[in-house]
Amino acid sequence: MKNITTKTAFLAVSASLLFALSGCKVEQTEEGKLPNVEVKADGGNLPKYDVETPEVSVGTKTVEVEVPTATVEMPNDPDNKVTDETDSSKK
Image (tube, rainbow, N blue to C red; front, side, top):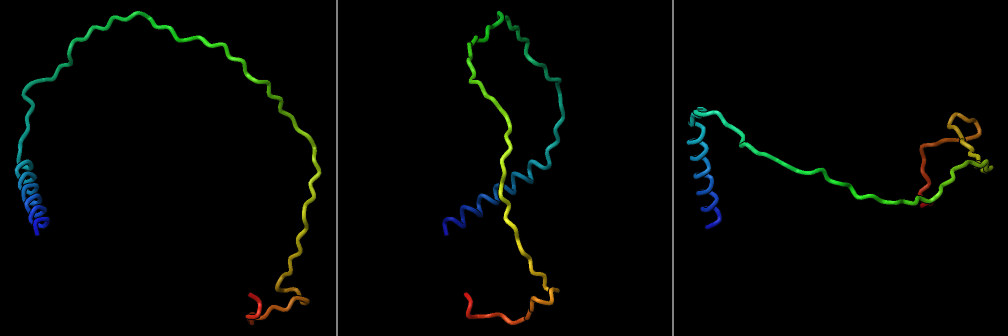
């Protein structure tokens, strides 16, 4: 019961604040200005590195690959009998 009362009170306060803030009128009375900032800095220096990369050689070679063959039996083939029956013994 306490949880419901807390939620109800929160919703009531939120609704009243929303109603009060929606009636506010805001007018700018003065222009904004950025602050004056002076920056003095000397040039920096990035670190230097000596890097030795490995040698990579890329090439191609011809390889023979055996490609499997597939046999497809089409339903319109007179030697292939297609029926609507299913064999329930094969699972």
